[in-house]
Length: 626
Image 1 (spheres, rainbow, N blue to C red):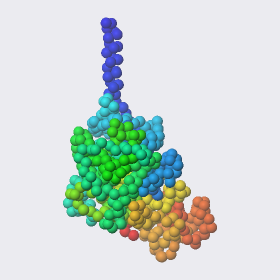
Image 2: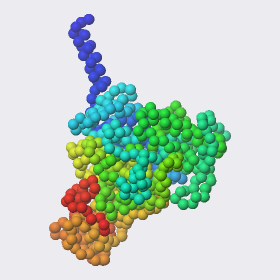
Image 3: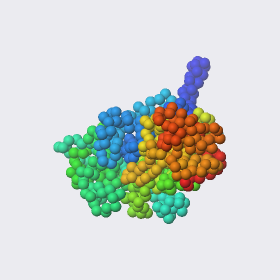
Image 4: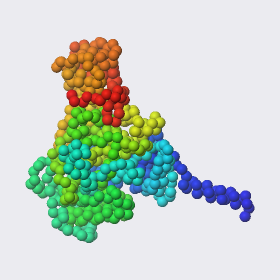
């Protein structure tokens, strides 16, 4: 053989080998294309940074799609950011809001397969690449860069990234990196939560292997083969649809109502039923892949027993496992629905006390809000008799927000944590785990990553207001104000002023959709305004408020005292008139909406930097006890 040809051949072979394991560079590497991983990727890519997602299945969406939990819990009245965009796609496809109100558990239900298609459509962006059927095999920090080894459809691929987002279902990147985290219930002495048990434990919520059934017609018989271990007594109480929030212990038996709990469009049914249904207790978090797979086969079998019970004992033989949803051999979802995972030990930890009384804590975590939720504290522990008894129905909370510091590890740079693994207590995780909140957490993780990349800053040293501004530009909520929607011209201004605490919201517990109201058209008392200003500007003590309502003259005086510049009542009135507030004089009473606009324009308090606890950069502790 010609020597020259041989050298060329060898070089070519080596080049081919090198290319097979070539270094792929990206700005942001997201492990997990679930609910939060997908929204993180979309947000980062739209902000102009390069993103790579590594997803084990061939779908995007995680619990919304791949796990089959396609009935949205909460945030119906807060269509924040990408959650609102996703829902609008559903409305457009199915024919409006009423067309997706098919089951009584939710205002928004959809077919998992269409949810996947929708998210893939939303994710179309030249900055965004997804590797499906792939998984992380190794990862390490090298200076300010992450080096990751990916199994990309059976082929080894090396990836170099500036920032990594852990968007896995169980916080597995944290586990691999040995980043400090918590699993299970916290002790009340550690968190200060009176509802928490005395002693911490590793008990997590029940998980569910969801099944999607399809109506094949009244005369059809789609009964599956009797599963091994089927015992009808295990499902005796499955038709009890009594709402635990009623405090009535009398069973309400209605099998038809039970089956329509998760009714989806096009004659399909999501089977995700807790009471004597297909919930099952197992804690697979610290198991290896082989152990997890074996455990989840037991969860699948348990769900099949429940399906067999529905078809035989309850007579729903016409409902068979849907044959046009999941691309799996058994037609079951690709993954289980995990309600709980590892929880990061973050820069801050959101506790029940922060949720219940956001304005009266030593910290002001609400100021750093990046995602919102309104669902009640809801835990599934019916299948584990060893779980401490906590009456979650008695835990009354308003709607709330998630602080940015809950996504950032204490002492690890270049890492952001999303999905259900953010730094919240076990009790709070019963609310923060729900789909719209997780979608919002993901969007915030993406905004944080992109902001850090674009500003050449580590997430641990980020300008929090810059991240929040990016979210506001994407119509995401920072504060859970139910009465000021993104379509409102004052939305961004009110969100920004709300995130300072100068004008506070009014929160209340309301059934399964808690609320916080801004009341934009109500007047403001001098007392409330001055105390709100003092909570953000601690040195401010120059005005003495009365019980009168704020007018332009008083507001001008307050702005002058804070801003140390000449601002007269006429200037305030003129500015408000430019914002289409008509008929004002210096003595006109001003609404909260008007005051918010004037504060934003003349003082711009949102520009004042804050730390992860919500403290202003003046190094003075905010006084939140107003």
